[in-house]
Length: 283
Image (tube, rainbow, N blue to C red; front, side, top):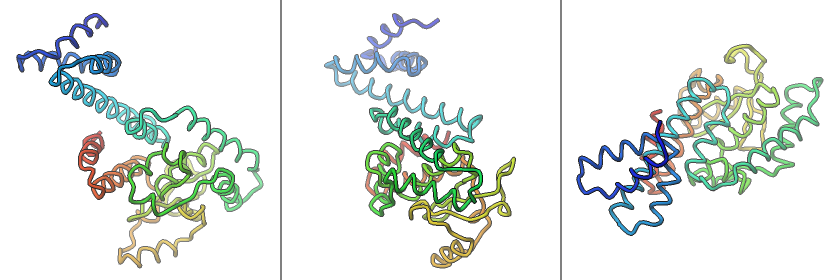
């Protein structure tokens, strides 16, 4: 069994001058996973050795990177039905000090607010009207173009702090709340856009024939029809394909989230952040 005493000793050896020996030390520290992070962060705050500080920073990066990849793999293999989990994993990695308990509490509150107004006799359109009232009216979320080119606005903590979102961040929130209420709302990945589909309740992933109507989360949850998607694609000179009208599985939605943030990082000149996400995305 690995002990804290052994880990302490290994961290003290991070100033080892023999490069080959240091590689063994580094691999041993990384094998402790996130258990090593508190001691590494404590050591980096007390060390005056620049080389040792850089090594510890690198070890922290590798361990945190591996932890994110591990969690995403676990989600992808067994919990794809829940979009909140990968959304939290990604945001925690970028903003580890955000108030995650408060965000979770606010999501629960939104669900409870909607539950008080939703009844079984409401039509799907009426249920969407209730959900729109809760998300955009009561809780004040709104779409704003400023959030499309700023990578920070794709993370759930920024969405809750500012109440401003883009199609993806608002769409993910909408799906998370709707599905916890038992409403069959799914994502659809359009080029440069993200909308939702309200479907019939089916046992498996809904198909095109199960879609009742579409929802634009960026425009206060406005209902859309199939012709609206065709018109959007025509404006972009993009040939209509089935994938633009049919619900998308959560793995592809998370991939779109990664790719969109990577693109916005790149456009903002934040190349290191973009490259880091590219590495994580290969989970």
